[in-house]
Length: 219
Image 1: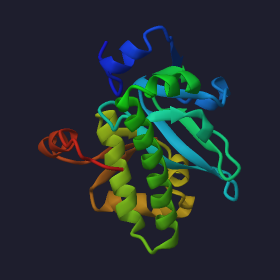
Image 2 (image 1 turned 135 degrees about the vertical axis):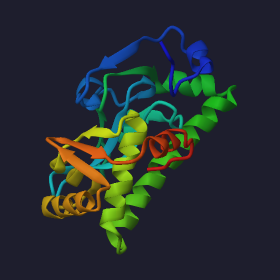
Image 3 (image 1 turned 180 degrees about the vertical axis):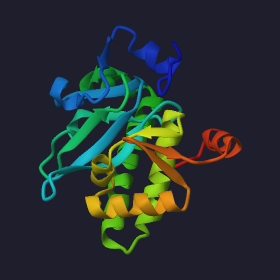
Image 4 (image 1 turned 45 degrees about the vertical axis):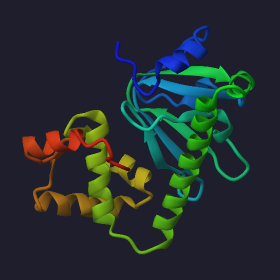
């Protein structure tokens, strides 16, 4: 099995720890309610959201996925006084869970673990600030939507995306009518096609391959 987003160093340091499996659509918080764990994604795709209480929706912050930036899943983010974060499996996934105390103990003499933890904190809050800026400043919603769809294509390695208009609206913190209007505009521009619930990105095969080979494609 291909190991993604986790390397031999992690496997060596925590070889006695078991992996937990999650099915597509499963919310990680339901199973892992211990607030003192750190997780590493072995395979699959996770969507990290924060809960918008006013709209009763989950707004996507970022994704963890194969070949993506190595990040820790910190259960301290699951519920704080300010926000409630949710980690949702978009594909069948596996996570290596490590007690925070054990991770911190090994990190005393391992700069890799120290840097990984710091990078994870920084990236998490960077994405939160990015979402805040998007909510405050004037933005091109169509461009944001199209880029998000292309990103979905990038992480799933498939130009046919299984996602509803309702989920897109929630992910991007937009209203259903606005997303519906933007989807229609992108369809008229022949950038996408709607086939039932699926959205197909209408790129040439060369463009698709070029996008998949881009190691710096950002959300």
